[in-house]
Image: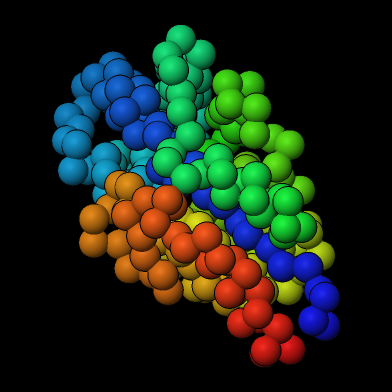
Length: 223
């Protein structure tokens, strides 16, 4: 099994892209329409979760599906508009690692709480779709993070065992989801300064240049 492929599973918002300000502005706009106060602290606490879970947490567990769909659509349309009209950037280190992992023949997946429309908007803005063997959006799984569904779906789609996947995340919900999937996680402290994971960095630029080579050898020793 020493030559078996390994996989890196990327989160999107706050891990690959610096989108927090876009989401914050979009949530403020739609919550104002609903006449619901929203603090920045509440927004940050929900980072990494799906809209249905976020909205039920804010507006009540008995919130109607039609209201969830309506508010979610308005929020994501505002977010995609911001992606189109403003300059979206990859976070420091993300681009070089996408390139290096592809060159080193790692499988790469994108597994995110974002809907497919947001993913497509980001792909159009940044031309990074070419790096991913698999893309899993929030609509494709039953439960969002911190449930492990999205990461397990990515592993299954790549036909690879969960225990040889490394997740890169920025949110506690994502780290918990990775661990519940039986995967190791790299935490990037972009949005949560106290984030805990198997390895933690302030930026992907801090990862040693031989980090994934080290991980591949680590996996091989366990075969």
